[in-house]
Image (tube, rainbow, N blue to C red):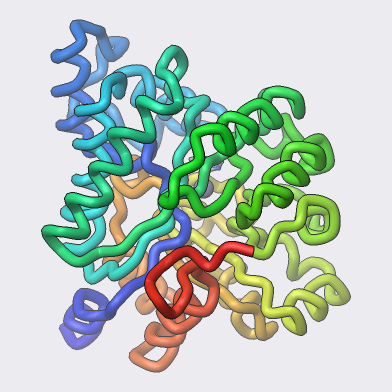
Length: 327
Ligand code: ADE
Ligand code: ZN
């Protein structure tokens, strides 16, 4: 009970939550009906059955199905607003840096996506006070040239709400070294940079820092397999945005046993760790549940949980005046 009160009341900073993975199953069903498209026989009850995510690829195919029903400005407004209010502010989230995956919505123009998302961000802030910025995800299953053209599009349609770029989808299909040019272009435009490294080796973390110019790593669980790289990340206070529930259910991290040992090891090594959901309804979690799970598995209490929030403040791309701290 005491832990329940604590995890619910804790102010939270959310740096690793994908918009496309945040859509409530009932909203997906609504949007499918609105656009007259099928959901491959799935209903709101079994859409996010996580036993069906045999591997990351299977999970990402469900993500594609969700992406295919979010099509117009109103849809993007709705899912952004719901993610920030019911899925964020209601759990004590003060600030979220939303991962947006334009390639997950084939056939929808980037400016259309932005118009809806930005309107949703503004309305959510007006209604709840939650602040947010955008991290545009480049899809690593596509080519480096595709990633570069997305960066060019982001720069062409520049909005204050777009703070940086990321790199998502399946790491084994697109090692980080393929995206050097795209990330360099983002850097030249003054965008902040982060990238996923969930199943990959510690060397990928080095590539992110030294070749892609990242100042954050999404997941990064394997960094602790290399003491030297770990020491450097501790020294430079590189943030790692960890997602306990999604990585446990997904079994992509090498710690899919409910023990959350990887996250504990990272914290014990002195790394700057933050906690988030990744794709909350798809993994049956939310910001409160993520903290609850760690409190139970690792015996963490007030001090350790509060430190996660302070880490989130340090790791965020928000400056003291409430605007993006762009380089
Ligand atoms: N997109 C949404 N969730 C993801 C994850 N865990 N890894 C890669 N891409 C993703
Ligand atoms: Zn992710």
